[in-house]
Length: 247
Ligand code: SF4
Image (tube, rainbow, N blue to C red; front, side, top):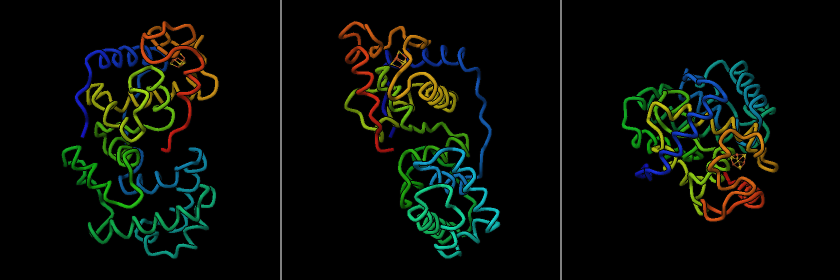
């Protein structure tokens, strides 16, 4: 369940949104895959680059032609088709099992009914599936169905922690429900993309480029930030916040 946002953090999130929109331009939502395909793609993308996971997904669909055929394939055949995704011996049985469960429960691979559910119920439905945590559920609901769910990956977790939007003791799973209500529902998709882009390009894990950061003003982790202005200051705490969470 999303938590009630702190007004000061909501105001800071709005400011971050405005500055990052100026920096990266507007983002407009359009669906990437249907929800069941997005589920498979998200499993493939775990601990893998976007390029390799797209390649693996394309090869999987070229090989089997449909999710139905993937669900009925041998695990070894799925492994062969997704080798570029890495960890294929873990991902292949997971994909098969989750597709079998969806087929058995829903009778098809059409998960569009999730878009008609309240957000919390849609999340809960997905999270009953093995291997589906808060991030995977949010990706499916946000990217495929345009619902205001906030996926928090390692970049977003790091940036929002350095900015003080989430506290130092918050873990990645908890961050979803804290960040999601910090912006208007219609802005959640863009908020996700702004933070992820900023984390990849500027607020990097090892060497954040604070000198060229457009949201540095007010960031408690920038070098020279006043101690006590947020969490700890300076490049040391910024580096510490960059430790990758288990997402
Ligand atoms: S000032 Fe530095 S630590 Fe803060 S958000 Fe920008 S790059 Fe990250």
